[in-house]
Length: 44
Image (cartoon, rainbow, N blue to C red; front, side):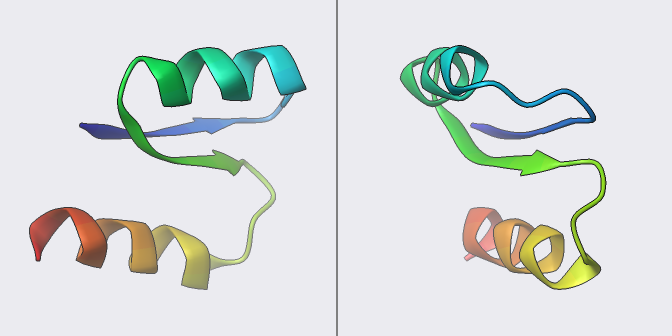
């Protein structure tokens, strides 16, 4: 389980990451809140 962050998101990359077990797929330009929430979900 992990968090994937990219500056070049595509639907195909998102699908592949989620199928591989990613807990979150975030864009590099995301505000910090989704990133922190993803970390909290992994740790919980």
